[in-house]
Amino acid sequence: MSEVVNLTKELVTRPSITTDDAGCQELIAQRLRRAGFHCEHLRFGDVDNLWATHGDGGPTLVLLGHTDVVPPGPREAWASDPFVPEIRDGLLYGRGAADMKGSVAAFVIALERFVAAHPGHSGRVGLLLTSDEEGDAIDGVRKVADLFRERGERIDWCVTGEPSSTAKLGDLLRVGRRGTLSATLTVRGIQGHVAYPEKARNPIHQAMPALAELAARRWDDGYETFPPTSLQISNINAGTGANNVIPGELRVLFNLRFNPNWRAVQLEQECEAVLRAHGLDYEVHWHRGGEPFHTPEGLLRANAREVLAKFSGAAPVESTGGGTSDARFIAPLGAQCIEIGPVNASIHKVDEHVAVADLELLPELYLELIERMLV
Image (tube, rainbow, N blue to C red; front, side):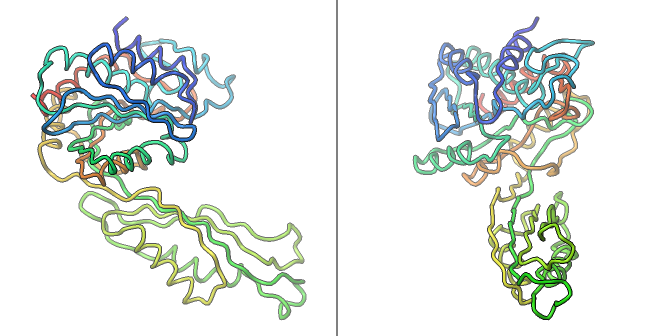
């Protein structure tokens, strides 16, 4: 069995459900210290973060990943134990195999091989891991980025190992991500009997025109390869459960996924202007999940395109789709960020898996990209 497969299996056996790292980062740190890396454990709250670097001076290239995984769900739904990795028909099964312990293992192997072959390489290469990517992402890379800002840590290029490929390893290069902004809106009314509406104020009736206006709005026409900004209402709750009571309060959850035409604060202002215009008695709590980022054409993007074309046999699709990733916290430091990883068809699902053949190619792919950037 290859080195990367063995390391992936070692990581999968550790049930590192957010935010419990379950010893994954210490296992990796031990290997990287032996390879000559300086390793720093950065713990914030219940979250473990590992920052490992080699070299100094010149540009810094960071490989970014996470050791936490989502819960497996009912174990009886899996064909085999989600935390006992098993290879069947050329596929390695286990929770986190694709998202993203396979990429993390490949990062480690690529870094070991890189510093062994180029001990005096130019610049600095680093690995940043967190155990809080799949959760709230408060004390993970977001907090580490704040620390880097205080220290004046410079990051020029960042490669995230999120499973980005769609059908074949290397068929997609992620060059940006949309921002995410969530709202918890409370609209206050006056509770009363449905037979006496003049003695009550129905927050559902009052809020509907404003919500309809927000949902129907065309926020923009997109930005380069980004789709148009979208607002989606995900939950509406009101009432006592009785059909003869006008509720006194309405609670609404909605989210905006937005492109670089906007900043979160601008969208907050636009939404609240609509709520005020409809005369609502409201309170809204915003959560800024991350601003959008976009990596323009340059050295990192050009090299990544060529490397992926070599490994997949065709030029990759260059995309800004999907949800969010921790690169949203690194990009504001001034870094160019891309995402390259295995096929994502099974992530977060029962019987999550990664193709062994793809897994064995990943260290070579990452190594070639590192060498192009730092040798």
